[in-house]
Length: 232
Image 1: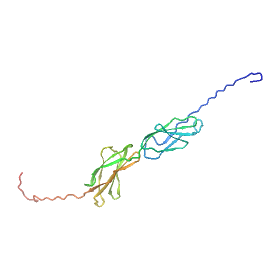
Image 2 (image 1 turned 180 degrees about the vertical axis):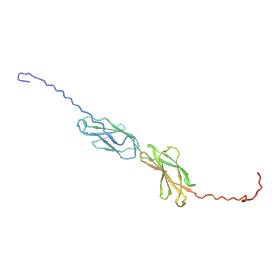
Image 3 (image 1 turned 90 degrees about the vertical axis):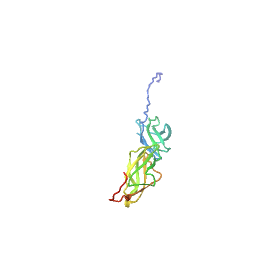
Image 4 (image 1 turned 90 degrees about the horizontal axis):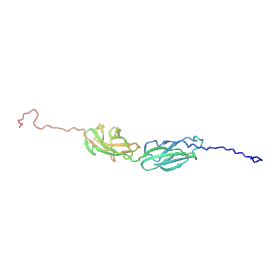
């Protein structure tokens, strides 16, 4: 206002806008991961500062829809029992939160269960053997099984590997055994691994006795090149 009490009003409209940060990118765990790692690494990446030039101040981690932890600008780790989980992560610039980044993963520290089916322990066989076994797994599927045995000069080692497995049904390896010096006792087992990198064996090795000796057959009667009158 001036000395004559004339007043003027200047109206200025100020709009304050804040754009939420872009969602982070989850590096670990990868989507659909099966793992036995404990503690499990949680790693993300994000733009800092955000599109408004605001610095990111906080990371929020949710597991299965429940707040797990809030951290500064650091990655973290996760400890939990075996199971399937969904990770949601958001970041904040102090004014607004980003949308969530999501990854699902399975924690599994239980090895596959392996059972040796045939040949039965401490039985006899010739040098051509079909080794049969069963395999099962609780959370993550078995992906390969390997036949171990001591019939080579290298000792007890892996021989064949099978990558196409039947669950709850007999799987098999066909093996021709050629022992060094014709040793007669096979020690064998099967090792299987799942997608979480757990390994399982049968609870004990099996023994198989190999018999390389053909039966001796003797003809007693009638004598060779003789005549006999029999009843036909």
